[in-house]
Amino acid sequence: MKVTRLLLRPQHIGWITPFFKPSLHIPLLQSPLPRLCCGQGQRWIHCGSSVCKNKPDSADFRELFEHETEKKDKSLVTHDDLFAQAAKDAKTKANFNRVVDVFNKKDIRRRGHVEFIYAALRKMPEFGVERDIVVYNKLLDVFPKEVFVPQNFIQRMFNHYPRQQECGVQVLEQMENYGIMPNVETKVLLVQIFGEKSHPMRKYQRMMYWFPKFKNANPFPVPHELPQDPLDLARFSLTRIANDLDAEITVYQFPLTDITETGEEIAQPHIVGIQSLEQRSLLAKHNPNRPVFVEGPFPLWLRKTCVHYYLLRADPVPPEEKIEEEPDPELIGPEQSFFYPQRVELDLNRDLGDDDSFDVDDVEEGPVYAMCMAGQSDQATLARWICGLQETNPVLGQIPTVFRLESGTRELQAAADVHHSPEQNAEPGTEQEHIIEEETLRSQGMKQSN
Image 1: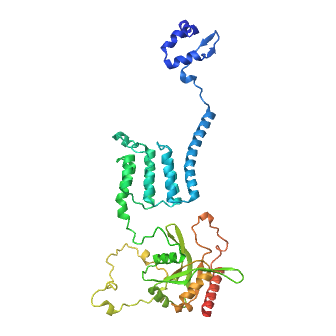
Image 2: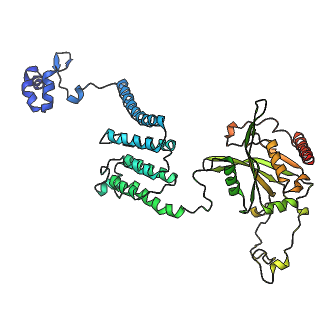
Image 3: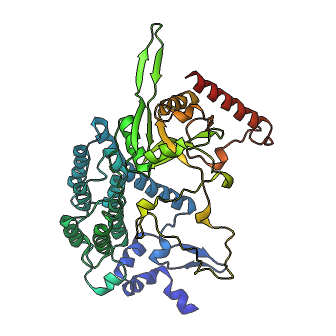
């Protein structure tokens, strides 16, 4: 104990300090050593440099974290502000490329390039460049070259620079979502940035393998730019829905906006219908005592555009009213025809354990006689469509027509947003049957007047 006290006395510090590191020698001479008072006297205790540092408390750590978070947020906001300032003039490809050039010239080391690329990917649809391969290659050119290339197999095994590789894969995934095929310039940029053995390069190889296989797989492709004219859009949509390529499209009413003498504006919606010869013949054979129904609107999605169409249909024919038409023997000929094959009433594939009580193929639905698209979804507009159909289908003047329309256009809604009224929960056979009868009588009176 005496020896320890002798070493810790102030006069002996001069020969103790040479044994310590030079970095610790200056703080010992400049700052006084802390004292601890014990019962017998004062003691000088040496403290290391790590202990002498001022440790911030939890509040200081929180302030530092918030300060760093604000810095990151400001950097992200800065990238968004660049595109917001460029969008003030016009959201064009030239302004988008100008923002990218400004970022490239701002810093030679391209600090914050990952955040900038993510912000640019979000803004591409606003500027209308989401389908431009040149712009995607320009974004890949923002990455620093030959920095993220792994130099040995250990770096390749441990996913060298994962955040940057993830960002590169995200650029290629957005190209894949919009159906953009990479080119040779894309491959050269990926090799210069990430090397040949990297995740973005593997993504590029998969895209180049599968894209040519599925490029022309859809026999009914939808154009990227849909027609803006409502008549052309209705023609395209009805042709896509119809099962017969020879179906005839008829414009029953053109869109028109007129101003009356009193200054009231009257809008006339468009009505476009489609009907094939087979549907026309089926409607001619329909029983006049059984009603037909106008149902809709039903949604049809064409990329990001939703249009609505209406059907003129009937209930399935009862079994007792079905009439099987025998094929004309002159059409069949001596040999078997492709359209009228020979009938063989043998169930060779049936087993004793098979249950034929229900089959999906045997479920019958009512025939569809015509389809249309209209600018408005009210009963008066669709009644004009039925009146126009009577010119080519005179039997409609004798058949009662019932309108089963929903209120307004049918949009995709959540279950929580749908409010059921007490009228919908009413017992069947009371008010709803009276409404149908009134609509049937009204439709018959309208057709008789015509």
